[in-house]
Image 1 (cartoon, rainbow, N blue to C red):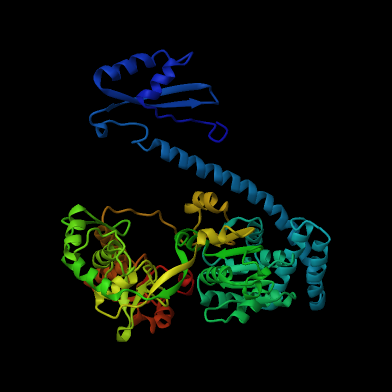
Image 2: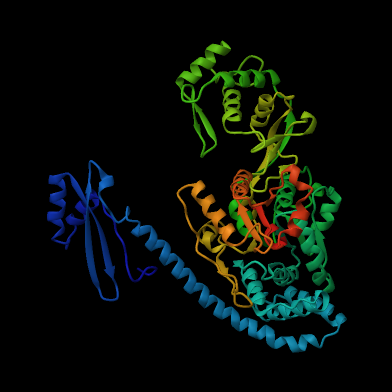
Length: 594
């Protein structure tokens, strides 16, 4: 009642109604409803509402046939409960955010009042401010007190002097939200990268490293080169972690006050630190292999939700029984779906049935597929299941590609279409796909260290994030990471029209509507508007290109397959020309470039 003061919903089963009737002061007229349901074999699902303002209640009954429940209607089947709870959650969250932003606005006004006095300071005095703040924090001053407003005012002035970008009031709001350990939802183009300089500077003054997490090496380097100038001007050290760096370079970079790093590089450094034999071999700050500092995750929805369960794995190579993989592949080719196994496309799994097991045991001449053979090469069951998976679930040039000169199998990222260099499937699946393609079976990997992004980022003592789309995942972010999502108003009113989503029953219907929309916008004609179509997979992007081609519309396909990689920058550069239609697979950070 405290959370939802206007209405409470109940949907009770017959047993629950019986329990209610046995209680004192039960509602007398429920008895005939219950006895009627017992006599007729029909349940009476009901929706009970209680209004705390008027102290009045009401009941609405709906017949549900016990023998054919789908013919009846209940509060749950009508979706009332889900819609009501979700709607109330959103309303409660919105009201709380408005109150929170009003409180922060007072702090923004105080930061603005300091601007005139900070402008008077010379360059040396600005650097001296950093030392002054450090001493004050060392003496025990509260980082959330007066020092916060002064530090933000100093960073704003430094950014204007160094890169000629002055933080808008809404960007100060975003900085305050991040410092509070929340997730700031800021629209594309509102300057999230500049916002991160505010809390990173302040938290680095405490002597602990501030981390800025991005989704790829390019963005990490770009942000460090531009925003790092602001931190360096104020006397802080700035580090950058890139793929290919050696241990010493990484250690030196992590020792800096502010570190720009990708989520994957941070994850693998964490795993390597936990495999180190002594503190001297670790690279993360503190030489403990743990995180103790402030962290801002850029494109937080992509990192913390989309890839949250993706495990990062360090493995070692051990010899693979190539003959067994080839034999399992030959056997899988002769097994038939439904007769020997079922395919679970949703969970990417195959399940052998009883006949499948028996026929395999007969063909291999073994008592059981689960028995360990004398040569200790492993039971047959996982080899056969992986071979069937390779046959049914993994398609060449969609999930994987054969590398040039048959040098192995490369995994294709379903989001971006890029070949993931150095990545391999675990548990023998990679070798099964190699056997299927008839190339040399490589050594198999044995997992020695593993972590998910979810487990990785929950270790930070102070975690925050920023993205353009987070309210849709607000409940999940709050539950998993204790990150409250706060939308930040735009600096200027949004001129773009944001239309509601449109849902279709089939992919074909959606594609037809999409093509119609592109035609209406003049896509493909020299006088038309430029069109950008985002897709979730390489396969979907290619089907849309095909549908547009049938209408005579020429498109540029940006899906990072090897044949398109060389032209990627050219495609991006031309995407805004009149009438150009660009189809791109989803990639965080790419939309801004276009």
